Amino acid sequence: MKANISRKYLLNEAQQYAVILIGLVCYAVGWTAFMLPYGVTLGGVTGIAALLDFATDGGIPIQLTYFVLNSILLIFALKILGWRFCTKTIFGVVMLTLLLQVGKSVMGGLANPYLLGEGENFMSCVLGACLCGLGLGICFVNGGSTGGTDIIAAIINKYRDISFGTLIMLSDILIISCNYLVFHDIRRVLFGYVALFIMSVMLDYYINTTRQSVQLFIISHNKHQELAEFITHQGHRGVTVLNAIGWYSKDEHDVLFVLARKREMPFLLSGIKQIDPEAFVSMAYVKGVYGNGFDKIKGRAKG
Image 1 (cartoon, rainbow, N blue to C red):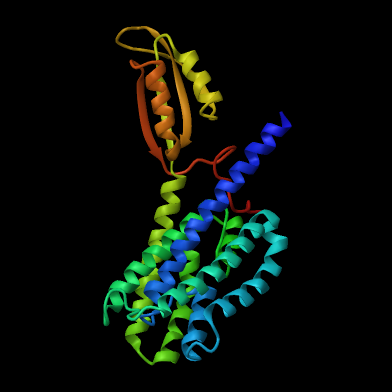
Image 2: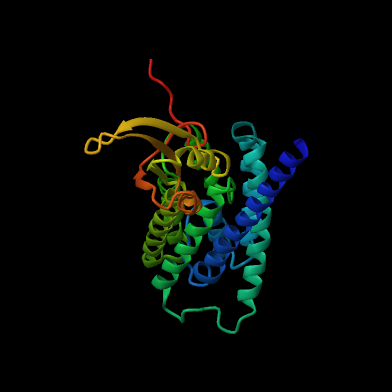
């Protein structure tokens, strides 16, 4: 039994690391293919590293500054966030350092590094921000991080119910503003603000969509026990049985009340259809669910 649990845990961890790697690839492509060639920066440690790269004309590579600054932040984060978060963050920092190196090498080897054509700074910042936001969202949902201001955001988010996107936006505005000190071009700063906004919206949208919960009311005349067993043992979700009376027919029914994640719905609905095709199912999206198996209530009681 323990061996099966351990194997399942290791498989789940391996899947999470694989998905985090996909997110890091998206983030690295956004930076190296769309942001750096056009001189547009975002915030965070990557933004600071990019500014140093621009200011020294590549003398201080972005991947070197990124790795050094994140190593310092991780030392302070270990005690607050714990080894589980920091282990995946260390993985993220190391892999993103390598991916940035590979991305810069690939783009540097191209005859024309401007994939969208010269002068397409705005469109490049839109595409780059979408990829960066998507990459960050994938990392966060799977317990990972790219380091930098992500670490600071994760620390604050642990104690306060404030969105990742808002935290990162506030901490990155100053970094983007420093782009003017390097290029003396207000347009690049404005492009950076636009890219930051798009990345934050994309990040919050992905996280909220992934974590969105669904509320189900299921009415079955004679198979409610089978449905409850299926949802509990195969769907791994709790079921509450409510006693109800149909006012028109005056028949008594057992109504199953279930809370689940949106991503779990295809499996649950498929199982319900197989067990009882005549079941009556009411589904509604809920803004938040707190408790075992869902999100934790954050914040501290006053007084």
